[in-house]
Image (cartoon, rainbow, N blue to C red; front, top):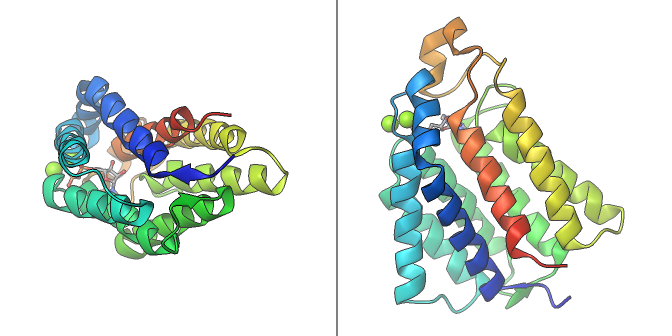
Amino acid sequence: MAGVDTDALQRWLRAFAASVAAEKDALTGLDAAIGDADHGANMDRGMAAVVAFLDATPPADPAALFKQTGMTLVKSVGGASGPLYGTLFLRMAPATGGAAALEPDVFAKALRAGLDGVVARGKAEPGDKTMVDALAPALDALDAALAAGESLAAALRAAADAAERGRDETTPMLARKGRASYLGERSIGHQDPGATSAALLVAAAASAVAD
Ligand code: ADP
Ligand code: MG
Ligand code: MG
């Protein structure tokens, strides 16, 4: 395949926006249990703003798309998740090396740079009950599948499965970062909202890249 071009990345972001809109109330419901009941509204506002800029001023290349997406999310999502999702995309931009279409390993490295940015900014470790618990296993699965010679589409499906497992594994965790950490032991037994939206992000990537 010719790599992940700007059109494919637009399909990814639009698919993520659609699933966030569909799951808005569910995400907010999860955040009501261990946070302040705004994660669905935050993410929906942010991704609607991303779709609006894609419609108004389609980005010229992947780096521009990532940069504009990151800036839009930082500006419009708010809360803890806005700067973190914003950082994810802002860190992906330079990792593209200015390419018009990203080869699978470049796309994977860009995602890894994004996750490194989230960790640098939020200081969450695996097991802290955050979006990192969905993203980190997803990117490990992506790297492993690509190293095993699988297609990007197949590797992204493996990543989406790993993200969903990671999301599910946040339920028994004790929150150590963000608002949920204020609850201490009472955070146990609830699925993390940010890990849930992060699993939607990875699933959207799998849906946007065809075999
Ligand atoms: P807020 O908590 O400010 O209302 P959101 O509700 O939009 O923000 O997002 C909450 C989600 O952000 C959490 O479920 C968690 O996954 C994620 N999160 C919070 N703090 C951190 C952190 N330090 N590192 C990584 N993710 C975090
Ligand atoms: Mg919240
Ligand atoms: Mg909030």
